[in-house]
Image (cartoon, rainbow, N blue to C red; front, side):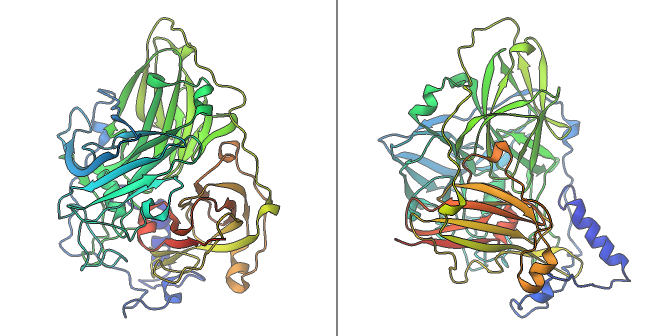
Length: 540
């Protein structure tokens, strides 16, 4: 399967088989046999593919002519006094000049959806209407919680990622609604300028809805940011990155396990890298500064972005807005759900072309015009005040595990947060206005981008620890020094990369609103298979 599973997992699978003829060895800690039974079946049972399972012929993007399509620019909607009305609907969209149109699900008729611009302090009201078909065109796994066979196939609810909102407008996973219904959300916008984004969050199927194309940018502006003189208007370009698998007739292919009773796979990676919904586009620019608002909207892929000639990026912001000062970055390592705000100065490249690459493969091309232009934009040495939150401000510390349970051939079958499933009683109940430190203890082999709804936070540090000691006695024994966040992570965040074999600590002030919210891994296949938990902010 092209890109379906990581090489690590393939290695573990074949290593296990190599120990004996079909002998299933048990992992010392997080294997499925250590979990209580679900539904009466044997947990350590490797699912066998159906005899008639056939993978369609898949498109090889390397066979396409690169850089023949201009980078698409989504329409801009300005949120203000009037209610915006945005419909979710099926559409066809051409991803490359030489491909037929692809069936996608959209907000407003295209993927990504329209860019919504709003002003800090001015509330926005958006009526989201579900006008999708009644049948899904991607494979639903009815064994996943929230996607049972007695639920409607097509459900949706919009989450504005990074927004501080009352729970009624947050897009809580259980608050889904079906085709023909609408939901009015109110976004107070009582926060600083930042690149937020909206996407589907329906319980059990949001991995499919987002893969189908249901996401878009929400840019929040404020007077301070506007006063800095950063590149703006035509020189501010949103770049929404995603990866997909396409059949040879350019239709979306979502990989499956091969077992029709349980089609879920632990991660999905595509070989077609899309930028703003286009495959290998180009962008005409002038020899001057440009600001790029970059979003990773992939299900599972981490992007490692570079410029082909090795010149660095100037990072000015992350998830929750501007950094304290610009940071020179040779590359940008972006997890699903994360945003990065960068400036590229093309002044010295007049008349040239340069590629934006992921590792070594191109994903788009910049074509720089010739001659000189007057550039009045600036990147100040000080962008904004980002005071560090002292650990002494925290009134509570929580130790929370990231868990992966595997079958007898070391294939992941279930992911949990702190060993609990979504429907179990709420155990994280921070007090409104209080500050807590959450220690994310990663017991898995994966990096997990962990997202908390409604709040922003700062990364304190990451530190290696003895996993065996934790599993045996729940004792933390550090095996290395604390690693402070890199300069590009030192601002306000709403997604943190929790690295394997490490304890990642974040400090969170639970400002905003009382109510029930979600925290989860933003690898969408993990999130769908129980790596999501509710937390409840209680009144002081």
